[in-house]
Image 1 (tube, helix red, strand yellow):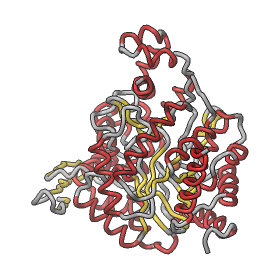
Image 2 (spheres, chains in turn yellow, green):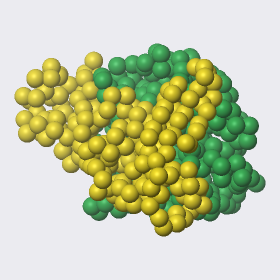
Image 3 (cartoon, chains in turn brown, red):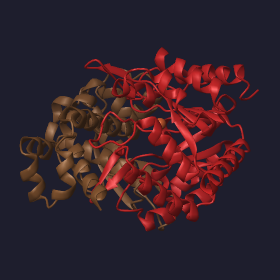
Image 4 (spheres, chains in turn yellow, orange):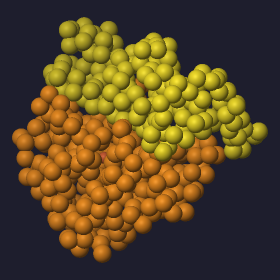
Length: 193
Length: 293
Ligand SMILES: [Fe+2]
C-alpha cells in the first residue's frame, strides 16, 4: 500500500538527518535505491523546512521525556543538559529507544563517554547522572542486580537536592550504589555503601 | 438516504454516549518527580493522565506505583505508540498489552492520537500527522475498529501538531478531523496548544479553525506551554501556558461539553506548587461555563 511506504520514508526522514539531506539532494535516486519508488514520487514535493521543523519537535519531545526521567541531572546541569542532548540526538538512537528510559540511559552513557568531564560542573554531577541512570535500570527495566561505583557521596547529595539547596563542598568519597531483587517479581532492595 | 439516516442516527448515539461520561474536572499529565507532592496535594488535582505506553510490561515497582496512584486518583491512560494511523496496521501484540492495561485501570475513557508513531522499523517520539486524504481516513477507520473490538472502553482521539504538511492533500485539517471522528465513532481529545502551534499552517486563525471542529465530540482538553523559536511557537511543554492558549482553551470550554481538562508538562519540571495555579485557572474557566461545580 502506497501510504505505508510513504510513512516509512517520512519516519526515516524525520529521524535521520543525514538521510534527509541526501534525500532532498536527489529524491528520485534515493527513493529508487530504497525501493520506495511508488510512495516517494509524491513525497519529493515534501517541504524540506517542514520536515526539519518536525524533526526538531521530535527532538524536543525526546529531550522533554529524558529530562523527566533524569530530573536531578536536568536541574543541576541546566542548559548544558539541553545543549548536550542536541549533540546526542544527532547520533543514531540506541536500540529500544522507543522506551524513554532506554533513551535516558543512552544519554547518560553519551555524557560520560563522548562529552566527558567538562560538562560535569559541579564535579559531583557525574555521580548524580550515573546514579539516576542506574536507578532507571533497576526500577524501570527491572534488572535483578544493578551495581555502580560512584566517586562522590551520593546519599547526602540526594537529601540536599530534595531540600532544594546543596551546600558547597566536593562530596569526594566513593559510594557503592546497589539495587538487588531476590525474585523476578520481587521489590528491589537498595543500598548506598 | 438510508446511509445519511444511519450516519445521523449513529452521530446522535455517540453524542449521547459521550454525554454520559463523568465530569472529571481538571487534571495533570503524571510525571514521576511529581509523585510525593501529588499525594500531599490530592485535593488540588482531580485526575491523573498517565503516559500509558511506559507502563506496558511494567516491573513490580511500577505496578505498585500505579496501584498507589489509582487508590488516590482517577487514572486516564493516554497512549502514543499504538499508532492508529499506521497504514501497515496495528501491532497485535502491542494492542493486547494496551487492552490489558486499560482493563486493569478501568478508566472512564482512554486516548490515542490521529497520527502515526510506527512505520517499518522506526518508532517516533511523538505522533506524526497523516496526509489529509480519504486513504488516511480509511486507515484510521480500519485500525480504530480493530482497537475498539479489543477494548470496549470509550476511545477519544487527539489532534496532533501538523506543521508537517503532506503533498497531495484532498481536504483541510478541520474536514479531516471531522471525517476521522465520524467514521471512527470516537470522542475528541482537543489539544488547544497543538491548535495554537499549527495556526501558521492553516492561515493563522486558530479561533476560526476551532469553530469548524466537531465540538459536540470534545471529551477532554489538553493544554501546555511552549516557547518561540525562529518566529514560530514550539509546543515544548517546558514553560508557562501563553495567553493565546488560555484564550483558545476558554473558547473551547465555552462551546464544547468538555468533561475534563489536562495540563501537560515535560522537561524542566518545577515543583508541583508552581503549576497548580494553572490547574486552578482552568478549573475556574470550567466552573464559569458550568462544566463542573
Ligand atoms: Fe496533547
